Length: 209
Image (cartoon, rainbow, N blue to C red; front, side):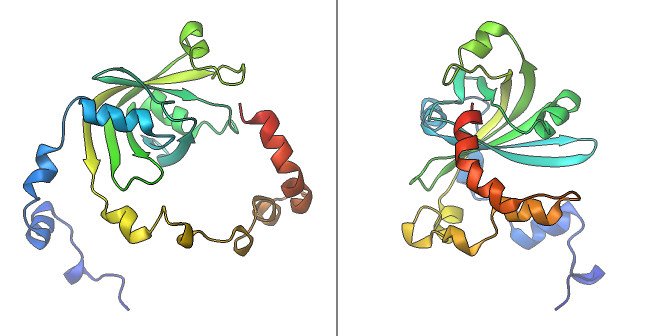
């Protein structure tokens, strides 16, 4: 099986558009430069969002989750996202301070449509703003304030094909490597993966916020 020769690799916009044809008209009219009332409802119902960013070292895509509504709508052109406690890699934040462009993908359990926001983010540390996002008495270190450039919904096809929300499609956790097993395999120092896995539920309770 060939992975692509010069003759069968698309390399120009003209070739791409000739291959696929014109976009479906509705796919263009659904795009707005602000949050409509319908789009706002999706943001406020979503407990999970994936944020994509770009920097000199390359691209990053990271999940963020909290109770529904954790991405707060400030107005039609602005949403806010708390930066919760993590591992301090700061991949997304490193990117944003050098290239503010971001893209958000909102998922809602049981709902086939997804919502996409493209915009520009800034990292804000205002104490009152951070305190307004407190969970379990813990404030986020910063809040991403995102100015909306484009927003549009995606139809159900991808989630329908993946069967993502079906209970029957759930993968038994024991069929895949655990976090401890993966960390132990990649560690350059002695690391007890089994102990890590046993202790992680309690560790997460103490550090989730």
